[in-house]
Length: 411
Ligand code: DSN
Image (tube, rainbow, N blue to C red; front, side, top):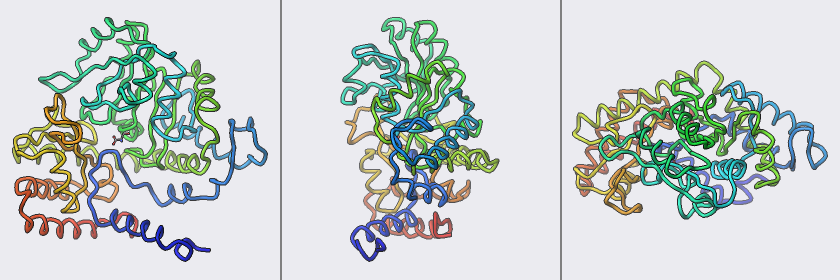
């Protein structure tokens, strides 16, 4: 029986979300809209198959087709990123990091990643995450004046703390990360280097950000952010780590791989290997630069003075509005962003002084510089008059009109 006939409640929720995605402007830096081809693979009957193990070494019969799927995904990922070894089975970013850290370090060893309030990720050593509980976690921060990474200071901390693993990569860092410099630091202190490139994987795939592959022992990434694939992850590593990583993914922390999602990752890699993908990422970066220029013209302070990636962090303190209130009032006008701490934020994490803005999703809709300029001016109008219901309503109507001209799936 069709879903809509059997379960109208869930059908309504799915249709509601479809309407929300079409009619709101998504500026969440970690979200994107995969193609219908990716969604078709993700929603396919491959989800029925158990395939614990690896191609041709499974613990179940009947794996001949899913073996092909996994081999194709691995081959395409290797071609896309130039990695010696790829494991496409991790279900999501945190388990990818978990399998990686367990491969390289033991309980109680020291790991060192970027502090969460400075743009790092929960799984890079935050106290409430497995990574902060299982390991001794020390954090580096961005500098107070530049709000960027200072590699000499990171080296000093690494020399003092002697971490087993150094983690680089971020969730809210708008500048490029120099993976070669992290490698030098890791070599100087005898640490393993792990890069979590989840946010910038698409930019790396397009060759518009230095690739961590030559420098890091292990690279993890999600596949649904700038890479525009299904909600999932993968691990890439040098050959010497391959066996250990594979064992930690399965049977270490996972059971059966999600073969439908692996198929969707294969489709995503095929898309990212097409020449058009570079054009897409180029526009993602141009759109972020356009936001930077417009926000500066409008008198906003940007963390790290701007961006050279797909995201930027806007410090709202001069506008006398918190990140939480900005998120709420922008949502009323159908502009979706997330509140975000800024480095050395005086506000609590649930309140924050900033918002994070990203361009991958709007760019997937086809929006370019003229649309970004309009959006930035709308954001300013709302944040300058957060209590003015007429402004919110007027901007909301304009946002919806713009969204209609740039459909996501209703093309
Ligand atoms: N939650 C993601 C983000 O928004 O950046 C990271 O996993």
